[in-house]
Image (cartoon, rainbow, N blue to C red; front, side, top):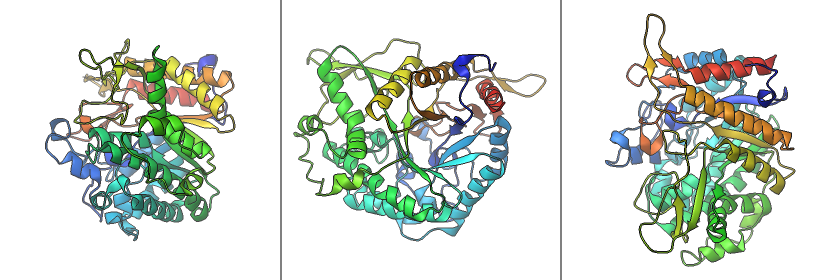
Length: 467
């Protein structure tokens, strides 16, 4: 690629890297004091994941840390967004820090810094300690209080070296897929609990932000990462309902200190929201330095007329319950292609639209693309030399989405960086090991890593960006 191509030229301070999540790559599920999370329990329950796959070994990153760090350096990553395993750092969801778990994250952070890679730490990427779920999980207010304690411990231990923290990754998934549809851990189908989880996740974020600022010594940037729904369709009522549940249920309390009246009205038949206590919204609305944006595809919606089968192409697995409490009568229409291996439509213009919209809504808040990438059914080419993975579709996907981000910046969006999902092929939640998002291929039998052509493309982009 050429620095002369304006669609792929970014300011020198623009941060380009890649991202992963603890349960998806670490493995070592029962080693060095780590205790089960809800994803350990969920994945070991028959019928919950493809082929019964679990994250017990995953990419074995826990044992391959140094070589994986060298691989990141070889790609030229400027930043690496990872998550901490709550169950590894503070087993059983308790109050004591596990020294062996902390040692792993210290070696990770120190290894990144030694290689000139900025660590971006996410506190929660869906792996709640099972003991806290046994006490009610995110439907229980106490979980938010425990999360604040965990945030303080993590920032106290690593906050002298990590200066970029994310409280939650995609609380939409944690609440609605975990407690509503049952397609994610803990696998509950309780609409009222899903909405309680929304609030308690929001509260956890609000309680954690000042704890991070208090405990860390590096004057950190603090953020939250949301998976925004870019909504299409001519039906204004359907668009409004999905926007309320998917987007504004999080941005309004976190950034404006309120739950919107239409959200409360839409869900009045599910819950009276009595779990929201006086003062909660002031606690939730905390100043943050950055808003993380995860984007993969768009959705098209309309109100279901009750005739025929309701279309449910919302991008998630068919499940026992609904991810849309109070709006189950909205239907999600099939998107025009092309598609990734997840069945998600490829729409880079949706990323541009989203970034411009968020910038207009929250003009003083910088943005970062914290996840964007694509799953494709890669094939390994084995010849006389080293094996290769020619994933032109993924490289094209990334090129088009980076260009969309650049267009958004040209329209005035304060975008600070872009983290590609994912660094490695990994445990893709309910899909097990059947979907590959990585720019690095992982052979799950041998744990061999192969940098795919998309990884080589990113390496070239980074090399040009550094010049």
